Length: 236
Ligand SMILES: [Zn+2]
Image 1: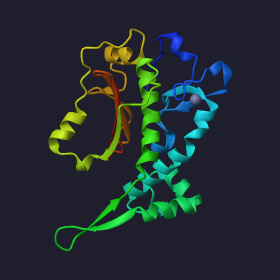
Image 2: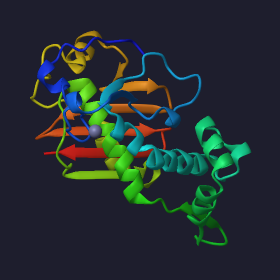
Image 3: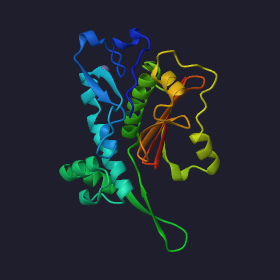
Image 4: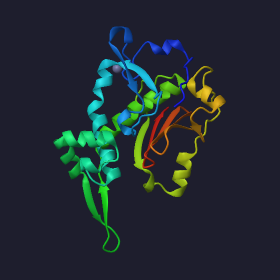
């Protein structure tokens, strides 16, 4: 990705954007948004990072591992580590037998029309939610310089294939609305320069991860993972 310097409001950079603690009182580290393991190797250069407290940076790792392993299993149709397309999912499923069997139990065959059996996977939505809200906080801060410290009004994650054509079109349509991003924010720079921007979406890795951040009676963050999972987090 292209590196874009952030010149947004400095006052928002003295605390952790996940928990709100003052960074002067807590050790800090850099967190990648999105979580690296969701991506394919080689990872893109200049991946967005945000400064967070060390407790938060480590605190999400179990949920992140769950999401990577679950997503990997769904994309591959199996929890077999050797069959994974996501390298991080292969590593996690290979070393974490209990997580592997947990995900195996989430796989169900449902009767479909005729003799066809349909395979569905039942995710632990609370764990998925924690990761997508975390990543969305990171995207909003990285693009707009806005710390979203409150609980979002809504957060959802659904496979694209369950959306109707109308829902899909509405989801893909990124309407920047009447609000203008702060001068100096990365989103303003993107809008003017087109850096990594395609139809309003920031493409982190083609076909693997893209996100959109815009203002619409609040802040909306949408992501699409592997052109399979659509997520939306909304702050009023
Ligand atoms: Zn924190």
